[in-house]
Image 1 (tube, rainbow, N blue to C red):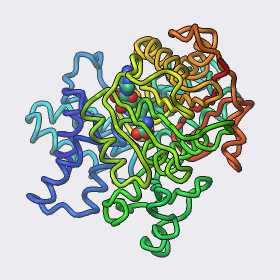
Image 2: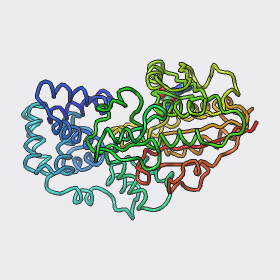
Image 3: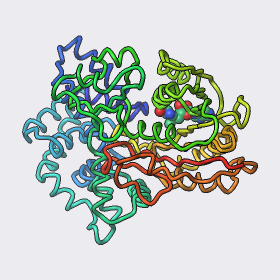
Image 4: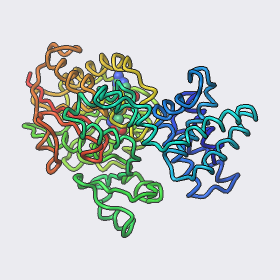
Length: 458
Ligand SMILES: C[S@@+](CC[C@H](N)C(=O)[O-])C[C@H]1O[C@@H](n2cnc3c(N)ncnc32)[C@H](O)[C@@H]1O
């Protein structure tokens, strides 16, 4: 079990792999060769995800227990130490078991000499509980609030700062948000309209295995341990796994008031196709057709798969949304769910927060502006455009929309006005001052999706 967790951590560290991709094949192999059962798999997953999520905090604690700078300690040794620190400070595994299992792991994967070092360091780590260590290694809140929160809630400081800027408010809100990022998100399904119903999914799941989503009439929240792949509707593509925030975004775009024709919809950044599949089903109900465009051919194939069986007309094209092959002004509704830092989905990717750099945002900025500008040009006058990101970072949300409304990003020849998105998410609380909408994990239980709705005016 711990060897498997170590292998996963090494792959994430060494090859920049993603834990959610590395883990399933390792677990499959362990099931086949070592007879791993569901409980073993759950524990191994918890060890890997928990260690990765709180890596920055564990590194700070380990640094306080090692008599040389951490950069002088080999990365595989640091991985064993972080894994050990997580067992000691972040799980209910008894201290002696956590230390002895970590030393045994070190002996197997690092050799006897380094196992002694691991033993000495973890014995020091074991002298305090997590609270005691945080009081020791985090600066007091009053001295440096952002650094304090960064260490206590295991986020890089620049991300604490960016999230706090976007969220506003005082200490309680940002602490709740950072803690929500450290929780495993529940799995939410979407019953694609016209193909499956929520009642059908709930019925198949049976009592206690699922409950209705909070706001989307298509959402079903799976109980802990629920396996989406076990449902026929999911295997047949009539339902899918989709965060309720993504469902709300697609529904808001579909429901935005529109004068004149409502026959042609575009999803300009469709891969892998979650929102496209819901939009396609909603478009079908209204007799509209969906064009789903995606730049990466392999992701376009995923969109094709997501839309297969859609009850209305649709087409999937591999196309660059910054140089679109379609005629300008030809769509009534357009969504661009642009590539972004993903800071709104940190719950799902435990390693992402430590891998992202503030400079990444500069890389996304021109693309985001250009995709929104082209989306506006693609809409007819009077048509609706939705700009969505899975990041609440103000540089990826409001700043992009404001810039494009001023004509940047290639939008000189189009004008647009805001549509208030809040009434299009009826019943959803805490949507802010508008006209755009920012969802939050700690307030809505969704990813931190952002949506701006615009109407092309000329
Ligand atoms: C945030 S994802 C979209 C997620 C999708 N809406 C969903 O719900 O499944 C952004 C997508 O835009 C694609 N993309 C990046 N640059 C693009 C471009 N210039 N034109 C079209 N698509 C692009 C990426 O490959 C990625 O699949």
